[in-house]
Length: 339
Image (cartoon, rainbow, N blue to C red; front, side, top):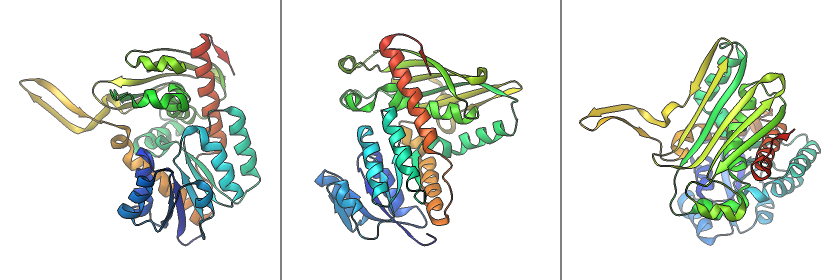
């Protein structure tokens, strides 16, 4: 597929709009030819703002669009596996936002279906693997720059949203570890050389959003993951930061350490005046990872055009879900979980 890749997108919510804009305006070799959303106003936005020639109210209509090569799924976590399988059966390449699923058996079912379609590419959107700083860190580690890495400390912290969006979203999110920390889980595996997980433990608390108690979720959580060979990861997730979004990771090796994203800086500007010394912080994940989302999409489209294997496998996505589910089990049942 060395020419133009005709892409359709399902899901035009907060992140879906960002992906749609990239596909329509910023990705060489891709053409956004169709969009899908159950919301009429979102379909209208795709037509008017991006000039998308065809819109559909459901994914069945999208998958039947003439000449469609690939689909981007930016839909609720609960429907990912069914939509991926349907797209593969329709002969389409698939990019799907994380997580692959909230259920391990569904992850394995997607892997099995993908094996039945060896010419089709499937990639799950773990965007931090395409962030320039994380790529630099991983390459340095793989080259032995800090000796043998054995500890990863990683955190994903969102600015508090007093509107209660996350409370409404929580029943379908899979919980804080599957929805937020799954990025840190995938990073830890990647930076440590993809070791097998052995045991996990997690705790959490509701600091602000009491409505999360109804679905057994928390707004702040801590987790420990133990891997084969003695490597470990500690993970912190928060939905209640006052200052903005913050993603940070520290990797410790036998001969040094690497830190990515300290302090959640917006840029390198630091102001010192009568009020003290301060910096601006990123308000949301998008400002922090906008370029990474672009690189991720370019990578996937290039894989389609030049028949390359995506740098992120379905097995990677399954393992992230496996660990995330175990962390949720540990949180709810208040015990360590062996894997």
